[in-house]
Length: 468
Ligand code: PFF
Image (cartoon, rainbow, N blue to C red; front, side, top):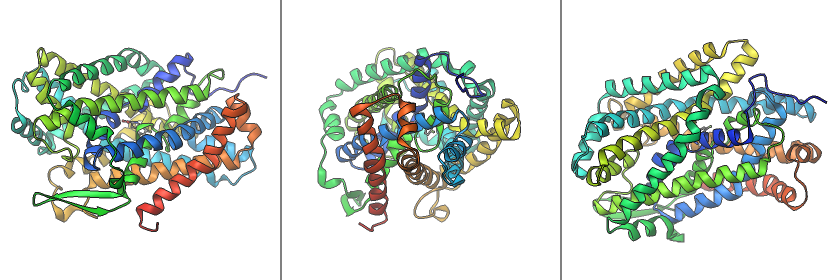
């Protein structure tokens, strides 16, 4: 029997699949988002919950997504329809694909705005703005940037054009090479930053903040009010940790599914998923180890929010030897990390337009790019024109709301449906054949995907709305 392939092509090797999926997983989520949400949610306890979510929920769902994608060999929407048909199930399962496409739009619209900040910082680092800068100076640089909608718009536009260009050319021709060299370079540079952080005198404090879980804080959310810390009971940090496990691994919206549909048949799904999750987690933790010592050494606030890395790392670049060079390189690599993630955010939608509307990749990418670009305006204004309380809903700006909805609700909900489909709707013959994995490993996956992952997601949801 000849092997069924995706009409969009196939990765040239096993290694390329791993690189592309790691490129999707490692991005702003690891270096920008992980540190700031860890800071906002109290540190070690949050990190512990996040690690647990990666292992018990993220890895099994990643295996499920790759498996479904490789079996369906189409865009997530059509893959879900085809697999539901194959298993004689209700075709409404295609909703997994649809909600994924929507989540992809939402996420990319603000992801591109933040990637725009990184682009802007390349110029600032290269022109020596950070030389000898202190905490106040760097806050000024940051506020000047995000306070100016026109500048943000220009950078957002540039990043969208970059991303659409690669998507239009096809994932394979586009970023394969970049991912091969640039991801390892980014990692090395983060290690250099950790080296700097070790000399701040606050390294241990940074490590304690990240790795010392104060278990009672798992269900607490604290704020500094008039110089005093006030804590209240809340399920929110746990939900944010779960949402971030999905976000950082690119799960719950079909990105990994669509990459799986281009995966060669011989590749081991389990080993790939474990490796990708390991590398992704490593990058996030190393980023945290570089950033928090700098935060404490400079008397900054760990809960400073989305600007955290943009207000901390420049201080380090400004003080270290050859900081101008390292700083520039760092932000260039951060842009590449964001780039290789951005393309995976819209690949599900592009693949669907090509399959169902007969569009060329170029047209599909152009349409999607335009829509996302417009939505991005809302996030741009969230940092300036619309930052006031009168523009907030549930105390959140448009950007906060979009991120909360997509990352903390849509991705876990998508992941829940994927787990239920892979574990309960799909016959064990089908999934076992696709994994080509027997014995204990398969049984373990099956228990996790049928019981543990869905139950955990449901419990976290119920906890967050205050029912349990
Ligand atoms: N995983 C990416 C990051 O951590 O930056 C973000 C992302 C990419 C989320 C692709 C979801 C996705 F489908």
